[in-house]
Image (cartoon, rainbow over all chains, first blue to last red; front, side, top):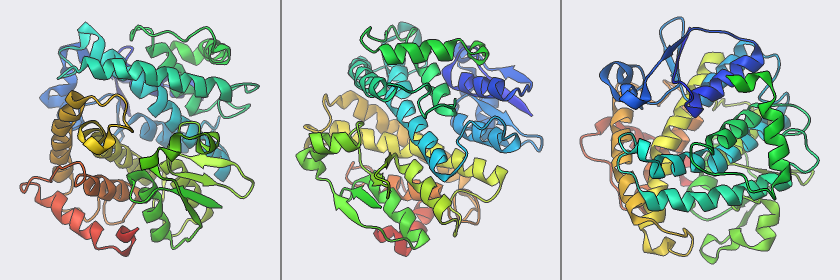
Length: 203
Length: 203
């Protein structure tokens, strides 16, 4: 197997954190997003939607989409479980993974992609008004998240899950997007610190 | 259990099609999106991210997010399997579900929400330039989908899956968004017709 990766890009990082939590090591190959390598002919043949990450399986099938890749590794190596352990907890993890993805990671990415000058070549067309609108979305979701984290170690309870990974990557991605977690959201800040302190956060 | 639903809104419809394919019937309660009932106090207490659908479980826990709800029903009643049947097919279904969600359904929704006059109250602020940018995204993704569907009955192969449901709902949602599948995408059109002919499509 081989993972197509790209430096600090948030989606491949989610996979790398997931693999670090599982203790799995696999070879990686770097795709240079700044040179638009992901839109070139060679990579587009691997992944027609032109995104990283992509996982090339041993039979050469190319599996894409961060969560599909993580789910595949969860099946190959169930321990430690990062997608829940029974019907209810698996639904709960899916719910929070998706809430955090659509409520935090995607809006933070929209702020970055539509407002950062370095993204002018990659995000065509940049729509600054859309970037601005997403700042408010991020703050609205952080308020929901902060309430939910009261008295909870992780977002789904006592166990670390893939939903926490999406949270960590979303919060870290706020920095290049020039966003900050408001001081009042103390539970989000405590959670962010705890996630950042795990060895997997270095991935 | 009870499902909070809203007329023809695309996300609750995905759950209803899923349930129809499983032969499951559950009580529903309608939330009137046009009156912003989903943003009201009562519904926000159920789902702080203010979206339909939401599934109230027998212990009163509120499960939200379309795919989390579908996945929960898949566990309660595995037949017919709509999320795949082994490690690889489950990853493949997850990949295509997400590709179609992010490549078709979300962009079509952006066209509808940011360009349709009826959405001015619900989508604040409407950013028409973002709606326009998504028209091109939809067409780019339809081209990918059309190639993939050559010689394939459903998007993941011979079996109908939840990824096809997202496809059907995304394609149907093009109509209110005033979009149409270009004639050249004959495989997408054939797939759309086949999905529309299933009894579950009436949901």
